[in-house]
Length: 133
Image 1 (cartoon, rainbow, N blue to C red):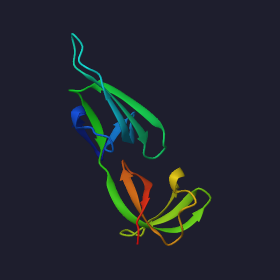
Image 2: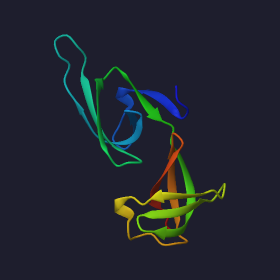
Image 3: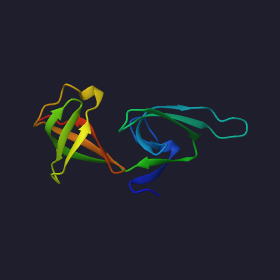
Image 4: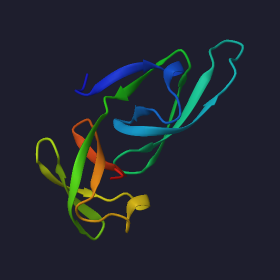
């Protein structure tokens, strides 16, 4: 099992939670449940968006199955500079500086010196939201 990965019952998966599909941590945006057939259990179709790449992913599993879930850590960081669609951010605990892509919904809204929340999963980071001062 990869570091930073756990398991959850498919019944525990809810919209807004995180799940791993094709080895990529994703945020669940919708769940469809089909009724059980004559010879089987109900199936769940989970649609999610990749945290780091923004790609839409779909997972189809029986509702009594298990799914991989990422261990998510949230950290505070400060924006050092912005260049194009990338932001240089400094972790406020470790003072490590990383350059991260700015999500579409945050483009044009970030300024140097602002505090942001980072999501860390499976050794990767992504900008999550601006922390209001």
